Length: 48
Image (cartoon, one colour):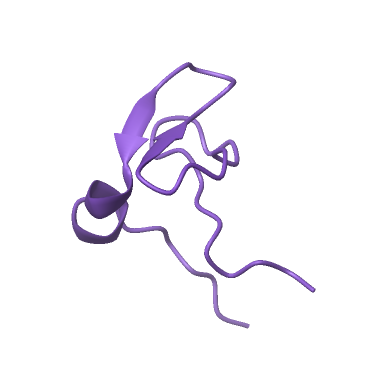
């Protein structure tokens, strides 16, 4: 079952770690707060 609450890095698109408050990207070493993911960064969902 796929976890729907996983987030991708807004800079490079790599899957972020599962930090409940602060997410980290292993590829570009960016840190993103969970609150910012839902309000500042929006992923483009492709519809088929």
